[in-house]
Image 1 (cartoon, rainbow, N blue to C red):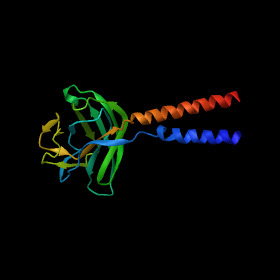
Image 2 (image 1 turned 30 degrees about the vertical axis):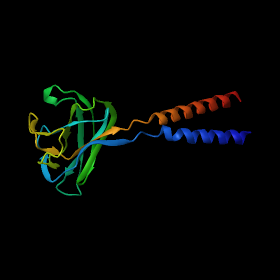
Image 3 (image 1 turned 180 degrees about the horizontal axis):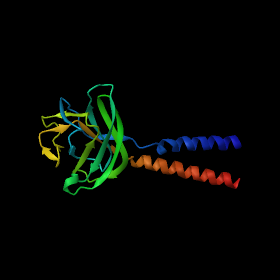
Image 4 (image 1 turned 90 degrees about the horizontal axis):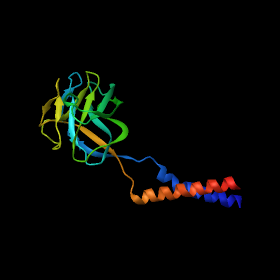
Length: 193
């Protein structure tokens, strides 16, 4: 009987475990064209506007151009409701180490946003680092900002991307709740025995 209960517990745990897994981040917005050095962190007021299609933002990334591929540096990416000099509110942010030339992504606890509204990514880092992008307006839902006062450049876009936490399907929620409920019943039965 004890081995039957152990088998039952293992089955329940295996059923509930996938539902307890971390919800993945998926790319929501992306402008990956990076044929030019658009700015360096030595400038101030670096930002990119965008329109998220998901109901949350869980992180963002920027494509770095370094003087040497062996270099690394800490980069900060912040999510703002409006530009900081236009009364915007800081919604989330964080830092990550950019290793060589390429993408550096920063993740945070998902922030609820209104799909289709404009939001802003604000970037900062060591002055020697460059930000890649394009002067050919590859991203139609936003633009680049640079220099003091966040001057806008409507035809420029940084190579950037945003992430959203994937929302589980209703069947996944039902499976998770069922598995957790069965685990609770098993635990209660073990206490009684």
